[in-house]
Image (cartoon, rainbow, N blue to C red; front, side, top):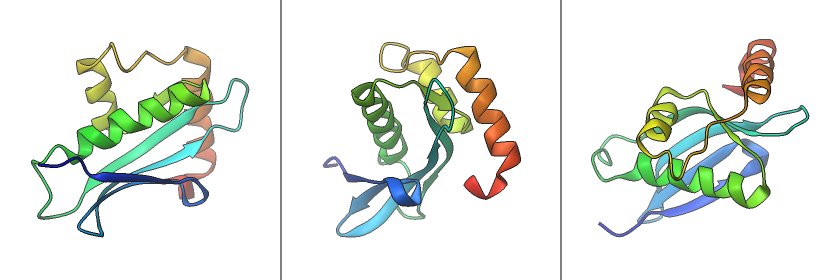
Length: 114
């Protein structure tokens, strides 16, 4: 399978993977309103018919690359992203405790971010 076309829609909090011009998967995320900042992965979805093609993995890999480029950690509140990070520690450095705590609090206070 060719790599999906991955696009960041930061205003909507979506990192989307496209195949044949249609959304095949996405990560719902937000930017942490704290110091230090972080990108917070909340939910990963692969659309029916696109499962098993590595789309979720490609999305999480790109999400970590985006964060590295921005010089901020990833807080993987999404279970899939957290599991992926455990399997790929060379690409997914563990987030410091403070951004994790702040991200959990921000999500609890603003459940619409999910």
